Image (cartoon, rainbow, N blue to C red; front, side, top):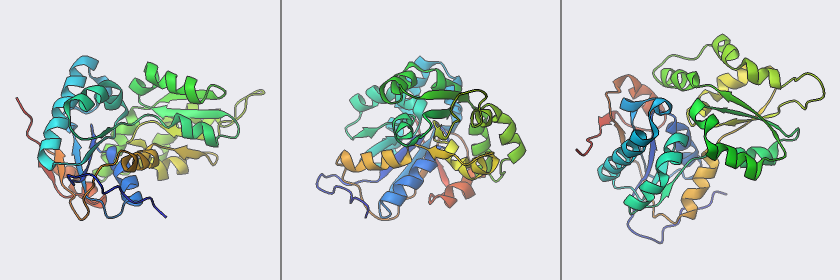
Length: 275
């Protein structure tokens, strides 16, 4: 039985999911699984996609600007920053500048360490997430007894965006991109085989069916969606019920209209940013 949303604190409003692109839809999917009656809004900064290639200082300011505009547009009760890069750069500033709870996203290192039997975990993420000190701190804190194979796979972000626009990823391309990950499932010598993979970017769970098909051996795939959903209840936000489904983008995204609809959102609307 799913834990009910806390409805003791006004004002009520939808859950606002923010990401640089469409990756946050994987988080929205988890939120709907846990809270099927909650109203959701979505905002993505597709004009600046991909975030991993932007300078940190400029990007942090941009994230605050876009999230503030999205909050003004949909009056949410809680903001979910469904982006690892945005969370590591701007979470403190968002919490200082907004009056609603702000929930961030981090790679699911802790839950992966809890389920791995071989103690060999793959971290599949963007280059920015793989190299950030914050990621290493998560490993030190929760998976210090594990071997971590890190794979930077920024192209998966592009493939996820393309899939939402109607182009399914090619299994051969995925197999080529993730060859180092597959090799770790059958390492040479006495090393333990990799058995668990952290999907360290919210775009990546959108590709999970194809990742499973490309994998030469069954693996446990772990993402942050369920943990984020549980956190929404913990912060005590008074989430409104009913259909909302508004979707905001910072650049035209009509090609993604059908993809957004597949995840329960309406046609993308332009998000007006403050000067």
